[in-house]
Image (tube, rainbow, N blue to C red):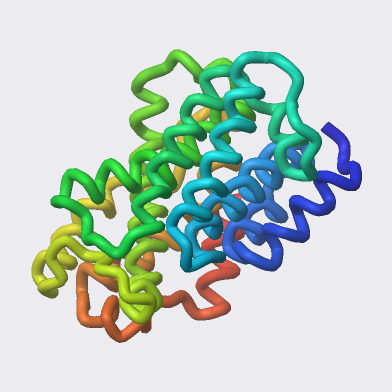
Length: 255
């Protein structure tokens, strides 16, 4: 894939709405950037769909639009013209479209204000959203790993860790919006949750080189989760962060 007007628009969308994934993409090999920008632009569009309206029915319709687009891609028929859907259709196979459909379905939780049912529900949400996105990216970059269950499990663990790190940083904003983000917000529970996810936040050495750019977006996860595990009060305070120097070092380390 070459950078046409659609991919340029995808890159601009990611740069504005998801600077962390934009930075991770820019340190990735040029050959990987079209795939990552298309997927991350899709993720931006879907993740913000429940938040751009106060009407649940309209939010449901926005998410359904994306599910319909993914169905078109997955069935191999004509695909609607759209600056994100069009480049997305060039990189997804039927399985990739199916995984992303699960991502969109999981985002229905963002429409309401109910808490997760339990810890398993939250884990499923992270697996279908952040982990699913990372696995689709890895498959698109390196199709040879598609049937490798061990590699999928490893990539999904990294995606889960990255997703939890982002979710913990978003807790104050979610609470301000009237959401109940944590099943159990006691410091000890949050610390244990972060500590458990740390196992999946290691550097992706050992994966096929072609697939590694899919995991670069997790460059900050280990530091953020370590902070939450050591001092879980920082989650409520909204002070989980990397210094600019450490951020640059982690990006270099993971690229």
